[in-house]
Amino acid sequence: MRVGELSKRSGVAVPTIKYYLREGLLPAGVLTSPNQAHYDDEHLRRLRLVRALVDVGGLSIASVREVLVAIDTRDDSLHNKLGAVQEAISQPGAAQLDPLAVADVQAFFARHGQTECIDVTESNVTHMLAAALSSARSVGHDQFRDLLDAYFEGLKIIARADLEYVVRHKSPDDVIEAMVVGTLIGDTVIKALRRLAHAQVSSEVFSDGPAQN
Image (cartoon, rainbow, N blue to C red; front, side):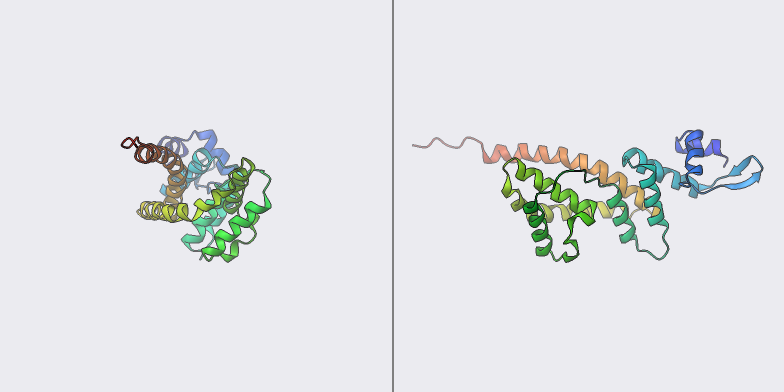
C-alpha cells in the first residue's frame, strides 16, 4: 500500500506518518520509485502501536523510541518486553519520597520474595508505589501500608485476566499494543468498578441494623 492508503487504514495523517518515518519510529517502506514507497501490514501494525503509545500512553517520542528498541531486541522474552513497556508508561513524578514509606515498600517486596527491588528508585513502577505511600503518610495515613498485601492478592486476579486478554493476539506488536491499551484503559475501569464496589459493600457494612436497646 502507498502512504495514502496507510494513512486511511490507520487513521493517522500523512504528515504524522512522515514524521514517524523521519524519527525512526516506523521502518522505511520499499521504494517503488524515487518518490513512492510501498508499505505492508507490518507497517500498519507498528503504526498502530506507536499511536497507542503516544495517544493512549501519553509517551514522548524519545520514550516511544525506547519502547520500540526493547520490543525489537532479539532473543528477549515477551515477559521482558512487556516489563519494559510497563516501565515506560508508568510516570512516577517528582514527589519527595518519605524514608519510612520507602521502608514500607521494601518490606512489602521482601515479604513477596522480590529482593531485587531494594532500591525503589530504580524502577518507575516501584517509585510510584513509594510516592503513593509517601503521600498517604503526609496526610496522616501511615497505616495505609497495611492494605498492600490484600491489594496485591486481589490485583493478581486482574493481572491474570489482563494477560489472558493480550495473549489472544499473535504478533509481539499486537500483544504490546493490547497491554498498553489494556493497562491504561483498565486503570480507569478499575477506578470506576472500585467505586461501585465501595457503594455496594458500604451499604452492607454501614446499613442501619435492628435498633439496639
